[in-house]
Length: 140
Image 1 (cartoon, rainbow, N blue to C red):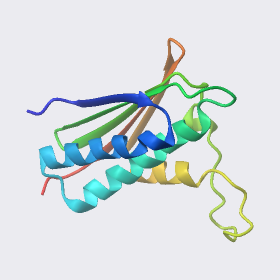
Image 2 (cartoon, rainbow, N blue to C red):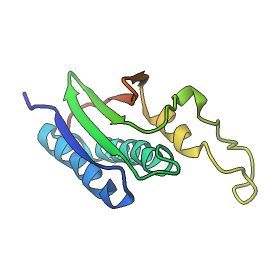
Image 3 (cartoon, rainbow, N blue to C red):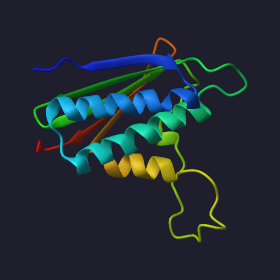
Image 4 (cartoon, helix red, strand yellow):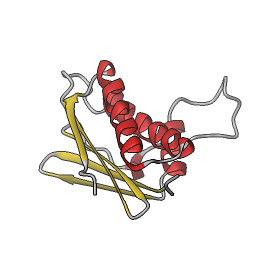
């Protein structure tokens, strides 16, 4: 059984590619099909981008830790950061019925995260956000 993967880097746009590469490593280790790999990459990209763009307003970015695991047909994506507290329940809902040119900004990324995840857990512990997303994935 493969070990969980973990990467800690500054929460900057320049490091997003490194976090997404970890998804590819997990998919390769477990022989996940291309559609599952794509879903996990999109899920991870949206969640990491939210941390990078919103978790550290008015200050230097802190660290973001990404943990990935796959066991018993379930891929787990966990993000840990010391940014401002932000529960997914506080995320705005996307106005998907509005024209894209006039739609208010915000919520589409969280819509994707909610849609792609089978389970979503958030907790704030010791001044750190911990978001865990789980997705059922069959191997190839």
